Image (cartoon, rainbow, N blue to C red):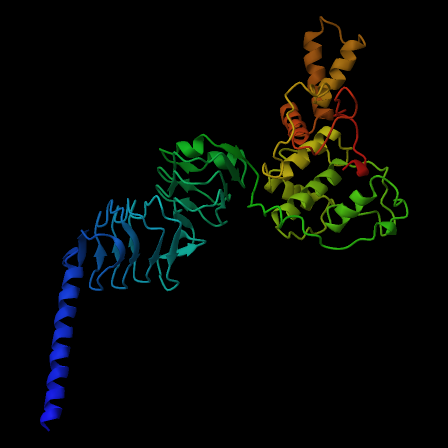
Length: 451
C-alpha cells in the first residue's frame, strides 16, 4: 500500500509540474499578442509560424503590419474580420481564409511575397480560384496575389468588377478581360508591368467601363479589342500529334516531293487536311477564309485549347470568330478572296507566342526590299499613276479614286501590321528570302505546300 501511495504521489507531482509548465508556455505565447475585447490589436512576437489564439474575433488594423519575419499564419474559425493592412509587409507566401470570415479590408493581403489565397469552400462571402480571391458569386475579383508566378491571367467570364488595389507591381505581362467587366477600381492595376490587355469586347464596349484613378499600369498597356488569350503550353507539350496519317494516301503527293513530309506533319496535327481522303491539291491556292482556319487550328494546337470547330454558315465563320477572340485577326476581310503571302504571314505570326517566334536572325526594317507598300489600293493607285491614267493635277479625283479602291480591295490589316509580321517570321527563321536579293513577294498568292 505504501508503495502504491508513493507511485501515485510521483504521478501527481509529475502531472502538476507538466500542467505548470504548460501554463507557463501558453502564457508566453499569448504574451506576443495584444488582444482587447476579441480584437487582435498587435502582434509583437518573433515571427516564423504563428497560430492566432482561438478567442480572437477580429484581426485588427495593422495587427501584423511590417512583421517581415512572419512566414506562415493559422487563422482560427473564431475570426470574422481581417482589417485594413493586417498582414501588409509580412513574408507570407500563402494564406487560408476560414469559413467564418465575412470581411476582408483593403490592403489587408497586400503582401509582396504572396503567391496563393485559399478560401474554405463553406465560406458564404468569399471564394478562391487558382489562388485568386473572389466574391462568393465570382462577380468581383478582389485580390490577385502579388508574387503569383504567372505572366498571364484570364479573368473568368461573369466577373463584372475588379476591386480597388486588386493587383499591382506583380509578375503579369498580359491579362485577359471578359466583356462582362463593368468597373475597374482605384489602383486595381497601379504601376504594374502589364504590356497587353486582351479584351473580349469592342473598343466601344471598353470605353463604357468605369475605370477609376491610379490605373497607370492598365492605361500604358496595349489594348487588343475583340480578342482573347490563354497561356501557351511548353514547347514539349505543344503540337501533340493527334493522328498518324499515311501521306501516300494522297495520290497527288509523291513521296519524293520536297513537301511530302511537311504535308504529313500538318495533317497529323489536324492543322490542314486534303480534299477528301485521296486528294490534297498541292498546287492549289488558299483563300483568306482557309488561311484563317489554318491559323486558328495552329493557335488551338499550340495553346492546347482543344477547341471543337463546328460547321458554320458560311463554313469559315467558327474560325473567324475564334481568330477574332484570340487576336489572330482584327477587322473584316473578304474571306473568299485569295490570300496573299503577306496576309498569311500576319495570321501565322499572330497565332503563336513571342517565345515560339524568338528571333534567331538579325533582319532590320528595310532589309527585305519589296516589303514597303503592302496595301492593295496603294499598289493599284501607284500602277495607275505610273501608267499616266492619273495625272499630277488630279488631286481631288485621285483622293476619291483612292477611297473607292480601298473599299473595293483592302482587307482588315494595315501595312505596318503586315510588315511587322513578315519581319518577325524572317527573324524567327520561319520564312526565308525567295532569291539572292532577299525579296518576299508579299502580294503573291500562297500555294498549300509553301505553308
